[in-house]
Each structure stands twice: as C-alpha cells, then as structure tokens.
Figure (cartoon, rainbow, N blue to C red):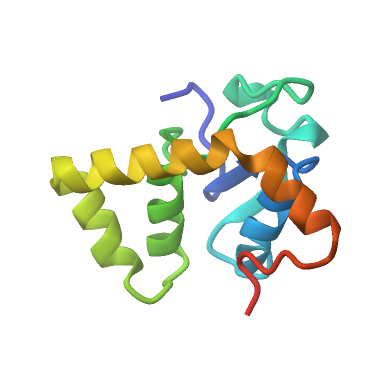
Length: 130
C-alpha cells in the first residue's frame, strides 16, 4: 500500500513492450480504470521508475493498494466488468492453487515477453484485440 490514493484505479504497463501494449489495449477505452505507460513518469508516486523494467503490470486501486502481475490482471477484469472477471478475481483471492498456478503462468509469459514483442513487431500480435 502507498501513501498516495488515486481518484480511480490506475493500471501501469511497460509502454516500450509491444506485447504489453497489445495486452492492455482492450482496457484503454473503458472508464473504470486509467491505463498508463510507466514511461510517462505517472508511476513515480507509486515507486515505479519510468526508466526501469517493470517485470509485471501494476494496478493501483483507489485506496493505494498495489496489485502486480496476475493479481492485477484479474482485479482489472473485475473492475472493468469483463465476462467472468469477478469470478476469476474471487478464485484468485480465495484459492491457493489457482493463485499459484496463475502467478507461475504470468511469470513464465513475462520472462518471455521480449520474444513475444518480436512477434508483435511483425504486425501479427493480436493479444487483447477483439
């Protein structure tokens, strides 16, 4: 938790990562959460340096609580009213095996995001697009 509480939740992502940018594209046009690249400096009050690799997306809720990685994804889905978002968030919070599996999966993908970004640079990346 931080000492800073935004007016509405903010999702920070690596704007230099094409895979990351494609992944958050689906949430950019909704009103429940502000979606910002960390490189703009808006993450500084939340200890997110604009010049350091993130390793995971970060969702700062309106109480200053920070969720990272898979937790941020599921919380974001719930806040934005995505189909099944509330159920997935509740499973993540209430089931140790579900949390562990998804944290592992997120970390596995995040560790390979450079290769996934290369695929996105060819114009073939459709992560998060309808």
